[in-house]
Image 1 (cartoon, rainbow, N blue to C red):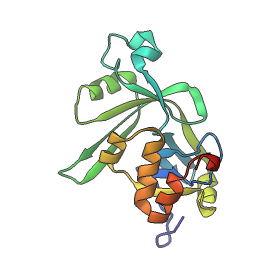
Image 2 (cartoon, rainbow, N blue to C red; image 1 turned 180 degrees about the horizontal axis):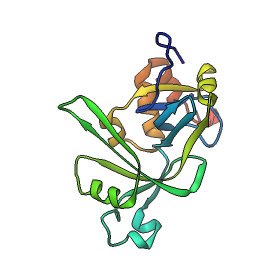
Image 3 (tube, rainbow, N blue to C red; image 1 turned 180 degrees about the vertical axis):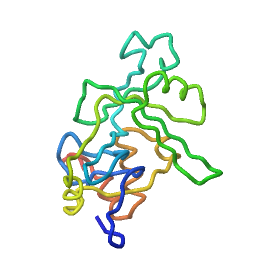
Length: 185
């Protein structure tokens, strides 16, 4: 991670992209949307691990409510028995990305009614203790990219990782496009 001036770079509101060589099954070929990054630690959710279910499929309590069609994702390896609601939108007039992380179900229902938000439910989250993520960044485990709502809204799964990583650098695009098993190349 490159430092800017004397302060540390804040990754909140950015995307972390797993290095193609990262083999940890929790983070292999993942895109993490960061919410918190401070001296106490870091927190985000994996954007590209859809479970192929909506909230109504996952829990019958949501069947007839405003959250029924919200897709469910695996947010990370921490607290996988907890559900987090995360919403985001691009505010063109302000040139700003707005992130709402950890919404209560009632608030998530209100956000679901607003068509300019993307709303997702995540089982678990990705978390790092104080200094852990910074150490991983020093070892080039992660790449950082700004959020492009067009890209994250139209791609999912490993395709999202490939598109965002490939947009950073042509060499990374080659690495991202390599098959998981070189024997099938």
